[in-house]
Image (cartoon, rainbow, N blue to C red; front, side, top):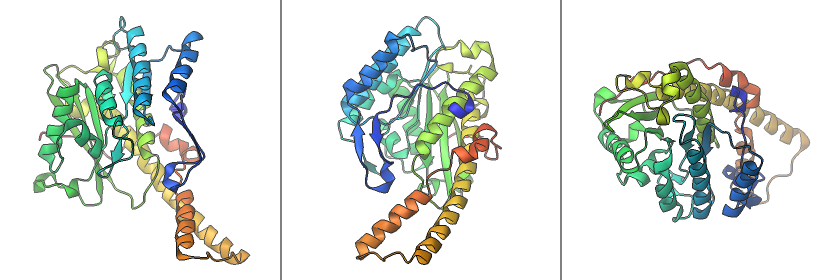
Length: 335
């Protein structure tokens, strides 16, 4: 967000030595009181003139509630100026069919997400919020419609769907090595305007891509709304008029640019990973590194080496954040 010109005040919900992909971590999680205290510190110095709030991982149900109170306070302050504040909420709860937060975090999110303007669930989180198991394109559409209706959310992006694992007609088939992002902005009658973007999947596991997508989406959505003109900027939740087609929505334009940046950065990360692993192997051989004492230690050392090698190379590839080349275009999708 900062590289794209946003002035950011970050309230960290964890203070960790490294991300959890390493499978070992030292540090602390912020309590709900600590999160609230930080925000109150901003308030007392009149530093809360934000036009966008992005919320992500919260380590407990009480922390989710504290984050919700921050969002609500900022909304109240902007209530007399429609469009002057926009809340993007990433309901970080789990992935690949399992929770990685306590179970009480799920109802805590369900209580606050109807206040948000845009949510960014992955496929598993969309199932948790909608109560619908996503097994096909039609059930994916039903889940999105249910979230719109149940929580009165104007904008949704389901951030990762493996269409190859769903049952669908050949007319909508994407190659097995494809990730699909599905978005929607409601019309005035509450019906969704659905779009999808298919992106080649990279054969690598990265940590932090959800945070990266959320941050890029914030900057690019704000940009797209401003480009659409003052009328949309002054509209509550930045909901485009009904005549705007799904592929022309600011949400679709923002998603195209966010995915373009991510794909380029992750490709460069894979190149750097391969080079680093070759260098590490050569250095170990040259220095006569003592071999691990057990298979378990060998596996652990290899995991740590590979995880470090695939740390996302953001700063050195900042040009792709600022000037993405959009190759993957939004397609209108009617279920």
